[in-house]
Image 1 (tube, rainbow, N blue to C red):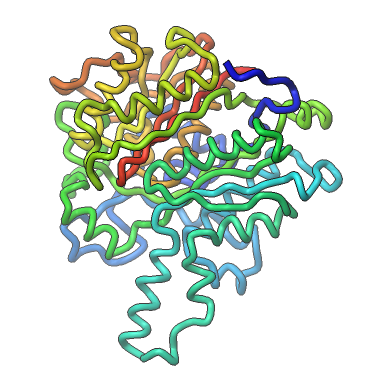
Image 2 (cartoon, one colour):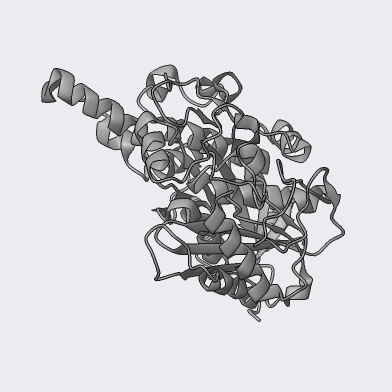
Length: 416
């Protein structure tokens, strides 16, 4: 077990979300607990020509992006940057950090994204084709670059320490949270802003995911399309959003009498070395990630009370993750929730948002239900929380994320 003291224990003191389920913590958490899906016919562009015409979109009125920066600056940001910066600044505000509360050079930023400013790329390529190179925006590169949120957030918060972005597809948000915890564990930082953001609900991305057979095709009934672990699952529902946390060393949080929400006690990561899109069928790569998180925390499997699963609603992922959990927990897998039934799959933002859900599970002592779960598939042998929220009686919560490329990441979150 890693020896830790107040100086290098990583605690969560602030959280912010911008998701299809809500753009403030209370609205978001209520929607997740309700188990009411957010999938709908796409409204941000004309999707009538697409084979899959629905997704989980963030409500622009609820986002209120001009609250965070002036309209001229906001127009230069890709949508993923707008979502990420807004969630990051909400986390900063939620933490109560103020001027003089932190050393700028020991305050870090770690972000995660999968495709970065893909909307800007699509739009500017059209400009180039239709109007020529002289009309391409001078803001194209800083708008689409994957590290844009890290740059803007560090400037806005005044965090001048370690600053980087992780790009590991659907595992990036969890990797970002885990790498942030490591900065505190190893004494590099006292405060870290960390999370993930994605805005990939675009014509090109929707077309690509649909063509590869990854998306549910329930155009006539979008709200029932995302079905984690269900026998009739047929693919994921693409979503957009962002989730960010402020993490501090316990000593730093105590010194300023911060509101401590939960502790990051373990972080695991592994690679499948198997296939560029498909997970290992036996789940062994994902299992190693979970086992590492437990090992770093010094926890036994019996100390895990709940799992917020990656649970994309694809046949391969849910089956492989089920086997992975049995590798780790044997026949005693704790209750499992798949919250993408509500939010859709937020790609790189998913792990960060689900880490926040895990912290809220601990705070409010309730496990959220898995939307649209009716009957487990023959390959699913788990205690799925569904129908209504279930009481959480204490213990650690494990949050998993697995990405294309065979990237696996798990964080273990516990009450202080």
